[in-house]
Length: 259
Image (cartoon, rainbow, N blue to C red; front, top):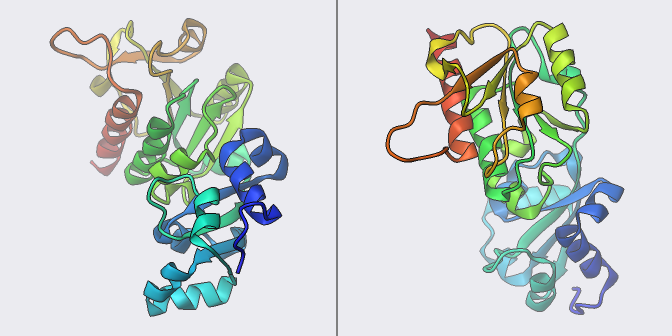
């Protein structure tokens, strides 16, 4: 059992939790909790750490999975040093990051989300989770979006991180042209949009551009789209939460495709 908070493995996991640079350089990240551990593909799991108390209460299914992955026991104090949560469950795992090619996001009739400068970890994680529910085929993130492997983002995805293809791109215009060349129509969610979002036809390949929580899409990105659409609002609201906007758009597309 590892008991010292100065142990190199403990410090390494803590660094992966706290530093985006460390995660990117090593192409690793951390998941916490029994649910995310059970949803993680075996092929991605590198290390598993558990506390004695967690093992005492683990059911047969969890014990079988731990036996298959292998694990290292740590003290409660050491686990607290590694954990990013206020009330740790007593299990976490170090995983290899997934690397998708942009071609993997397409398919016969793509439905995509293209996120520009989304900064709130909860929003980003929720958008990924919503994307899975609506049947989105992939998510593209601009280079200035929050790190998708940040611990709060990972938790907010509730496992969708392992099932929704995504990739990060520094060249928004280049990606828009790539999508357009592959038969995908680009729709910008924009306050100054000329068309109401539910008046468009999304049954063919479609991608929705969603902008920053506070400032929305940049004008340059919005003008690169094929259509600029708006979500009508009553009252004195200036805009909707980015996650809510994304949900409305992708579920409208999903509704049309079911019909």
